[in-house]
Length: 154
Image (cartoon, rainbow, N blue to C red; front, side, top):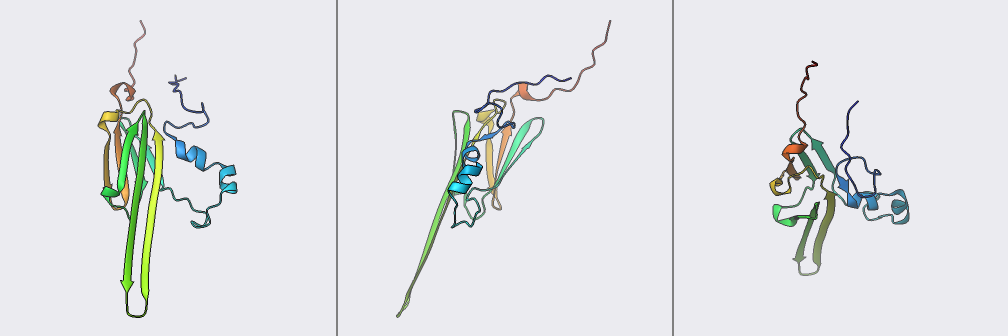
């Protein structure tokens, strides 16, 4: 038998993992998908894919965001919530004697993750390389798993 630490999460135990993706909870419900189809994206979401890995001393988050530059990202922590957003726009105009061609694009996204209480907010590190935005979230010392200890019976 093992003892489990109970953590209060928004909406109780509807979301079993430590991280609570607020956007995912509201945006990916079946009724939202059926009521608001996004024909431009052809059924795909405009949110980047997200991987979360946990080890004994840290969490690692990888967010796939190809085509952006470091300057395009805005990352903040507000009231225990990691907010990630990015915005990028480009335009190109070509004028010739008998025609004008203008191309433009605009890409943006927002993701918000409720951080577990075990994360040291002041020690979060972020990097961006090859289209992957990576976060390294160190755990507080008391949250790290301690090695088992044998207790002798007298």
